[in-house]
Length: 425
Image (tube, rainbow, N blue to C red; front, side, top):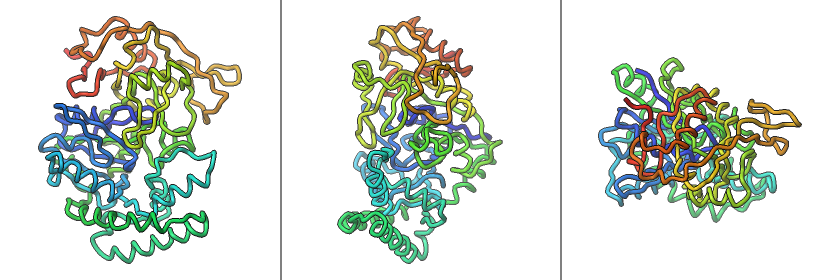
């Protein structure tokens, strides 16, 4: 058996949660492989809506194993809130959720370090969600992190040592007044630790590989998007983990030859949260119309998302890096009311046009557009591809021809039922 991978091809917020939920009936195991509670995967079904931050998006499907992999960083406070919220709504997921012992913990002081670092950057801040994720990954690579497995023995001593080091940094390097904030959250943090102990804490790499040998099917769920990858994204305005397909190997402990299909998810337009370059951003009425029609506000932070036209230069770059085998288009219905729709097919840099994603995106990068007619049709009630207006089919065909990758699903609304499988016999 192979592990199929589902990830975002843009700057995150592509709608991965919905699609994982839609595809999970075909899989035995759903595994999150990177990122932290800055992720916000929104699922809607049967008049129910839930945003998941740490828990894999297959958790609402019966008899499915959901795994939080070693590449994920976990905030016990956020995790407990998520679990408590699900319990209030009648969901007990304790039997279906497994947590890797090698996943790293976000400590209370990691959040404070995140805030202090952003404050010190001033105008050059990267737009962090202030969840403590960057400092946690720094401790991980600096070999000073605490992992889920550490809570099983000798934890308090390890915790105290790390916290003391962080307090020294906060005080001596940043001059950051941390005491009140730290004291207000430490008890909640340890309450979260006690809850985590009640779940199945496993060597997830062993569990996954043994499951593959037994013939079980696995889908790996990524967070954020390819253009936020720490190595290949729009650095330094990126996240702190590998969001690309290769991240599934290191974030779950699976070998490259065990990767099967790679589902790349993209919006029919583009959005971005926080700071950083965005060549097709629309700082005008059209951008505001996209934001309003798409309800483009961060599901984790509530921040308004920056909006723009679809960028094929960036999309083709992401497809190349990820080895995408099929694409899934989200939120096509957001473009229903536009007379014409633009697509960026190249960048003009210093008077020359290129279709290659450059080393650095800056103000000298100007998008080159083609313009296609809009479909001026409400897509939200459509139930099959045969009902698509011709202009929408043309939009899909243009993207497929430019990228060389088929689009297998088009989403025309937030609910499970508003998911159209394309080219089905």
